Image (cartoon, rainbow, N blue to C red):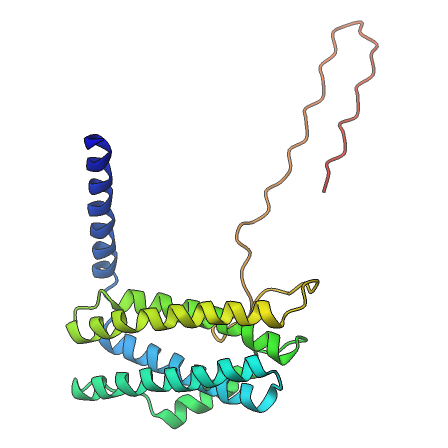
Length: 219
């Protein structure tokens, strides 16, 4: 029992050390980088919510959109106040809104708006969670605390987006790869490996037995 406890303690220390090393190693991720990316993603969420209120007639979609507008608006306002106090430059809100409107045009591609919006919200919140998890290790105590405080909110949003999609998507509907603000479509997880065919059987001299054809590979 003591051995097992020691192993788990060692693994926990190793994991924490690895996270710290990875955070330190990424020297390009600075406080201003986080502020810039987080504020841009927040504006995009708010504009996507406004678009959903205009385009959707589904009550659940509208409820979700209002929540995103209110809660991402609050997160962004707090982030901007914190950045201004630290003299960290923040992108002009009007410029961010224009960028968000342009990228929102790429979200819908042959899907109903409601499903396209719900699926996009899953992807953008996954990306936001990754960003905020990274920011927890910033060498800035206030921004680190800000990221840590808001992570549960973003995780709750992700859970809500997944529930929304499950609620509005027909059970028999097959969906194409998800699209996002940052990339056109999901990349395949792994390249397909070539299938190996069995080698032909060797014949002894004088053996007139015909080689058997390998069985067809089931696709």
